[in-house]
Amino acid sequence: MKEKLEALKIEALAQLEQVSDPQTLNDLRVKYLGKKGALTEVLRGMGSLSAEERPVIGQVANDVRGAIEEIIESKQQAFQRAETEQRLRAERVDVTLPGRKMPQGGVHPLNKVIAEIEDIFLGMGYRVAEGPEVETDYFNFEALNLPKNHPARDMQDSFYVTEELLMRTHTSPVQVRTMQSMHGETPLKVICPGKVYRRDDDDATHSFQFHQIEGIVIGENIRMSDLKGTLLQFSREMFGSQTQIRLRPSFFPFTEPSAEMDVTCVQCGGSGCRMCKQTGWLEILGCGMVHPKVLEMGGYDPEKYSGFAFGMGVERIAILKYGIDDIRHFYNSDMAFLKQFARN
Image (tube, rainbow, N blue to C red):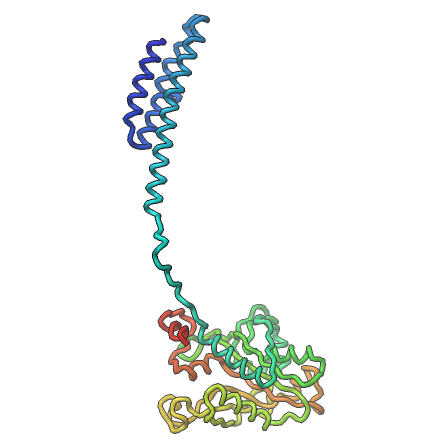
């Protein structure tokens, strides 16, 4: 048996010396040291040895196993070093090369317009107020003089979550919440920017989600002339110092009297063109004097206080300001479109 073990050792070492890849090395390890390997087969005959021979053969077997395991471990370490060196060569970075310039992002055009509008009104002494996008029916409609089953609700076809909760259809609820939080104190001057939701079909001029900025002023002796002066100042800062405005009578349940406001066409300056349909005017917002019922529900005495309110669509302002022909450009993540504003 001793001769078999010595012969096995010579054979195994000879084959292991010739190994050139990890798979062959593993195959030889199983062949000689596995549970059904050659060394195990030889050792199964130890039961027939005498008590004196077993320790001697056992020591020889351990020597053979040790010699085979040593060369296997040596080969494994060599293969691992070669693999590591190859990976390092493949992943080597030339630190002398110039760095890759990261592309610079930009502010989304809608955010640019919102920030510009906020800056204009902050300069006139307003503050910015925000509120929840999931709103109660009370704040979204009833506190704005739109009781249940009022026909004017049809103009704001809504996404209801429950019978009393819905995605807000305008940012006017923020005005009511702000009024109530003031507990009748004046002056109140806020603008309310944010997303709103209506069941509109997406097309070039409509979207089920869009942005509004509404504003409200409440105090003593607030008049329609104050509203007109405020909106004229805003329009000239937004569209240019030569901009003119006009107010046309309209209807909103939460203001009385109410008006639609037009500005002179940003493209032709009022002379008439395709954009303004040869009228010289472009509609940009709705406005009016706060309805006495809305004042009362907001915690103000309509006999003592008055106020005005206005609301504009941010997308509408951006379309006019930048000459964009389709509202969907703002939402489809077209990098060619957005990069135009990153440079501004």
